Image 1 (cartoon, rainbow, N blue to C red):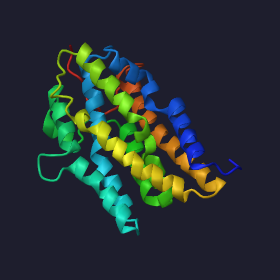
Image 2 (spheres, helix red, strand yellow):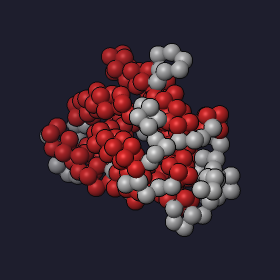
Image 3 (cartoon, rainbow, N blue to C red):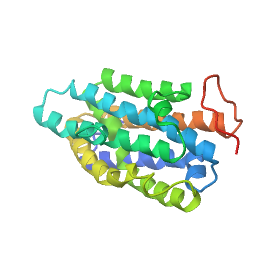
Image 4 (cartoon, rainbow, N blue to C red):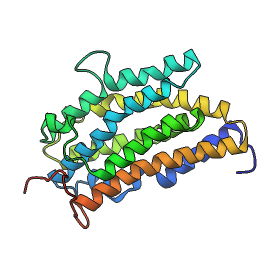
Length: 244
């Protein structure tokens, strides 16, 4: 990238990353949304995705610690409340635990991350390290996969309710609040990125950060697909679904 893009052009460049790389295009996600996953595969997805969900507030706390702007810290800390809750028993992490219980997993096992794939752990921890160690501009830009999440959430909820008799609207309650939360979060992050990426190199770094985050999400699904779909090679210590 050698030409400085306008804010609108940068926004469009970021959208093109999602159009090409967002994980809604992964074969495992298509299976999940189209009802082609077994109950055990849905459970494996819920378990491994919880590892990601549980680390989102960890990532955001690390990001807030690096911010000098109090207004930006105030805006960003809402994400901690969204995920950890304003009090015990509330928030997105708790709702994902209920999702896991709703598909038949043991809450304690999920909360303790028992049986999570090594590939999931490596991907999630790489994301936390990225946010902690790269520039603040890149760290904030990496959150912009939320540009693409409302559509995938709608498809996920509709598809899972239509195809899996062990899934209910209560099971999927995590997704009720996410579209509006993601819209608010995107507004904060996109405003910061478009105002602070002032050179072609900085804009390229922003795009690369979003590509990295898409790669993180894609890698998590690669690990699931390899272990639970094709070739079905379960690594030692991984969650083993009950025989159906």
